Each structure stands twice: as C-alpha cells, then as structure tokens.
Length: 247
Ligand SMILES: Nc1ncnc2c1ncn2[C@@H]1O[C@H](COP(=O)(O)OP(=O)(O)OP(=O)(O)O)[C@@H](O)[C@H]1O
Image (cartoon, rainbow, N blue to C red):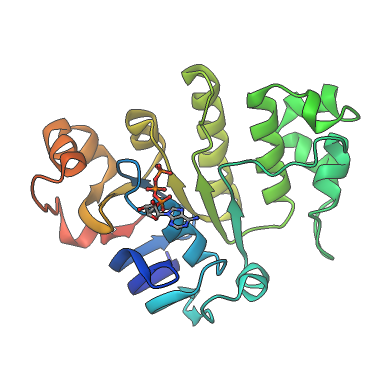
C-alpha cells in the first residue's frame, strides 16, 4: 500500500501564533486516521494547513510523495486534497443537485452517479439544501467532496449536532469511500468511540502536540490512555510504527 498523505515536522497556526508543532503523520491510500483531541487542541488548524488554506510555519505536506507548496489551496486541491469543513458551507438556496454540480471538475462523474453512495439524497434532489435535515446536509457535504474525486479527504467534525445513529451511518459511508476510492481520510472527531470504530489508526492532539497515537483498535481498548492524553497527563505512543494509518 502507498502512503498517500504525509506531513513531516509540520508546524502551523494563525499569523505568528502557533497552534500545533512538529506533527508527523502518514496515511495510506484506503485508510482512515482519526484525529482526536480536546477543544482548542489545534485539529482544525492542522486540517486547514494540510489543505493549504493556512500557510505552514514549518515542515512539509506531501501527497503521493509530491510535496505541496505551503499555503496554496488551489494547488492542494488539484493534487486531490479535499476539505470537508465543520460549518458545512452549503449554498442553502440552491438545490441538492446544484450544490454538487458547482463542485464538479472536468473529469468528475455525473452528479446522479453519487446517489449510489448517498441514496437518501434522491428524494431530496431538487429541494434547496437549506430544507434538508442535519444528517442529509452532511451527506450532501460528503457528496460535494466526492464529486471532486479526492485522493485525500480531510473531514472536520462531520458529526456536529447529529444523533449518534445518524453519525454511525455517515461514518460507514466514510469508510466505504476510503476503501472504494483509495482515499486517505483524516477524520477530526469528538465522538471518540465512533471514530475509533471507523478508523484504522488514531492520533490525539493536545495543545498542539501529538501526545498519543496507535492502531484504532488498540486505542479503543485502552480508555485510560485516551483519557490521559485528553487531560494532557503524559505523552504516550502505543506503537511507534503506527504513526502510519494502514488499512
Ligand atoms: N480564527 C482564529 N484566529 C485566531 N486564533 C484562532 C482562530 N481559530 C482558532 N484559533 C486558535 O487556534 C487554536 C487551535 O484551535 P483549533 O480550532 O484548531 O482547535 P480544535 O482542536 O479544532 O478545537 P475544536 O475541537 O474546539 O474545534 C486555539 O487556541 C484557538 O483559540
């Protein structure tokens, strides 16, 4: 399996403020890395930096071995990096189809083809996005990402404000997308247990530092380690080799 997304010694923040430092991550094609951590840990800032929307303060980001230029979101997107932001950013007065269509690229599939992954959107196809339920809106957000044929999918708190049952369904779709499209997925999530169920590996960010990482199954079986990582009690590495998220 190939390492699809890699960052090395990555440091970033806003302006001269640093939000995360010296982050090394590697995510294989077809695998999901859960990026966990308390509020304000730097998770969103890290995703924005990986997607080029914020310039890095140091270190590198590579997709399939090719280094991305820091702070260039268009170039990152052309290299296959797609960000699913936590605030959905839908055009609420445009229809479901139109919201998907505006994100299409030259070689994208037809919008209707996405119904295979998101069948629940079929009944809503011509409705304005603003009329959808929260869960349906998140499906639409994922469909809009998928039409861009991502190689790297950066997902920020897909579950925000949704019932756990809905989140489970969405995460199952995320897992299928990773496998079927050979995507490297980074999933920022507050629902720790649900995220560990869908992920292959996980890393916990606390105050800008990766304080714990390992295979998702091993972390799910070690709640005390996770708790300590969230509380910032000590730095831990379940398994050094698992800095790589493998499917
Ligand atoms: N627009 C902004 N301008 C300046 N600083 C910001 C901005 N947004 C976030 N920060 C700061 O950057 C740091 C990291 O925040 P970030 O949003 O990346 O954390 P997070 O782990 O995603 O938290 P949450 O789970 O609450 O979204 C925090 O100290 C936060 O206050």
